[in-house]
Image 1 (cartoon, helix red, strand yellow):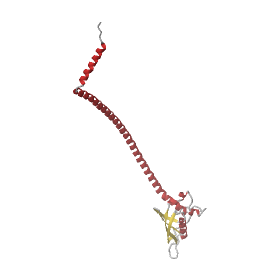
Image 2 (cartoon, one colour):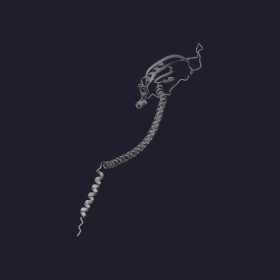
Image 3 (spheres, helix red, strand yellow):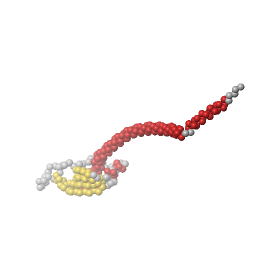
Image 4 (cartoon, one colour):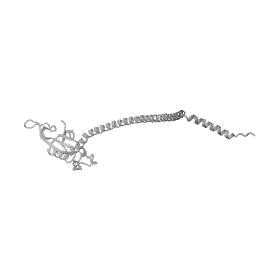
Length: 238
């Protein structure tokens, strides 16, 4: 009877293959080639990963750059709109200031005339020929048949709670022809004349002291004569 040991034959065959492989890589040349192949594969993998990661980073950077450019463009539009709004606001503020200055310049003479009319009405027979305002200084020129009336008018300006201050009064007495008297002549053949007092009053005007600035409280001049009937302002005609 013939007996065949299959296990030994397989083991021998496997051992022979291992031995053959070992023989092939046991030489220095074979090992060098194998190491070169392994290193090349690893190097290719590293380079490939580096290229892929670099490309991904570049794509992300480009995306962020485009996003920042879009934000910058939107911000530029907003800033341009803000500049336009600021320019419009500045133009409106300039117009408002111009209107305020115009109203102030228009209200100045009106306020002066109102203050004067109140005091002139308290002195019958007083005539105002000219009112000139230069800055905070007012010069009044007029005449009156009685110097006491000029003094009374000056006193009404002086006691005005600071509306008029630093008064100075200059008076000169002159004789003029009485146009209202009958046409008669005296013994010397001359028409009758009327003696009047020409006056010039200089004072400082402070608009902030006006009655409207004090909640409508009357000035001292108007309060000193309660019940005095208002009389029209009398202005001399040249």
